[in-house]
Length: 195
Ligand SMILES: N[C@@H](CCC(=O)N[C@@H](CS)C(=O)NCC(=O)O)C(=O)O
Image (cartoon, rainbow, N blue to C red; front, top):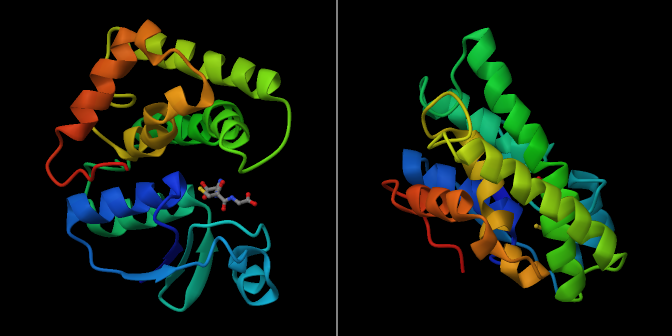
């Protein structure tokens, strides 16, 4: 398996965390972000979105961290990280979808604007981001983990841009259940520190 990534990418980090927890070897291919390698034709042939992460797996190319997490969890994670009963699967996928909606367009993009990585309405992104944090706090108020009562790829998918939310101007301290959940994630064996 090859992972095209940057060290700073939160979406690439998700894959690195799961691979670390499950002890799965892969080859890192670092993209030259500053020279916009991810926007040039050779990379766009791998991912027409021009984004990292991208993975080459068994001769096929996949973009989007959700796809990579699903593959690694099913292939190497048994029933722990992506359980297969229909109800459990639906519950995990519900949170994967959430990580790609309110978290992505709220927490990730607000941070992106503040850090001058992208343009757009900070106010609008912060509005989505606050919804993300409120919803997480509601869920985590009486659950240790986002789905099925155990750590899964739902937690990994939601973690990085929640952890980095302060950089997008969010008051993370206003959501104690979310802070407690971040700490629970960080205590899992094999978890990687997010720089
Ligand atoms: N839904 C995608 C989002 C990927 C993403 O936003 N990647 C960022 C880096 S973390 C990127 O490459 N941004 C460049 C761009 O969107 O132009 C995933 O989960 O992989």
